[in-house]
Image (cartoon, rainbow, N blue to C red):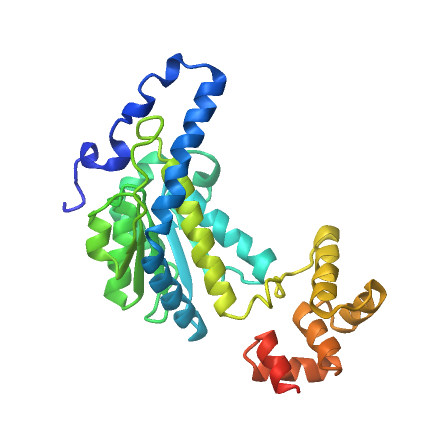
Length: 303
């Protein structure tokens, strides 16, 4: 099939001559060499800023329309998708109903390698269809090689149903770049240990996902100033963070913050609006609704 590009042709699979004698080095030399190689990751991701911008604009537009974002990948790539999606709930109050990660081999593959699963093109199709994708949705395929059959199956099915598609790879001119609407391709060069894409490629993918999802959340009003105001305070640490957020945003005392947060039913956005607009909980919620959940806009409306 068209995704049967020879692995030896991929940058992520070629030997890194700078590390060819790494097995003979001291511990300090090994660590230093790995750190030197990792410097290439930041530069490679920065070169993809235009593509990340395009992807962030696409995803935020679709989510505003009621669509969803699906990450889909296998192995390390799939696990990175799960990690990013899982963090969105405690950080921004966004759950699986909005952003969901799918990994080849299912939940087991998060903890135990199910390496053969990445070769199953039809499973990628079936796993995406199980989520009932629509034209409002975006499917982001994560594959360091840019040729993983499982991911390509999902992306091609996404295209068939009219969903938007994004590819995230660490190789140039791959199959996924010919399939996806937008391709983000930080080329980080050969790995320190040949073919071990959990290293530079994995770091690059994590950086891209962090940047993309955080940008989208900011555009959706999940951040006020640089504060995570849609965070859900589900434990003591997060409750203390919620208090600091309200205090930083408003300048009121801890005692006043605790009082207003309680009245706001731990809704950080509402608490900030209540304090700054000098209104009650119900009025704060009404202002936020008019402002599509954007705190700064709600405060402007409430003037």
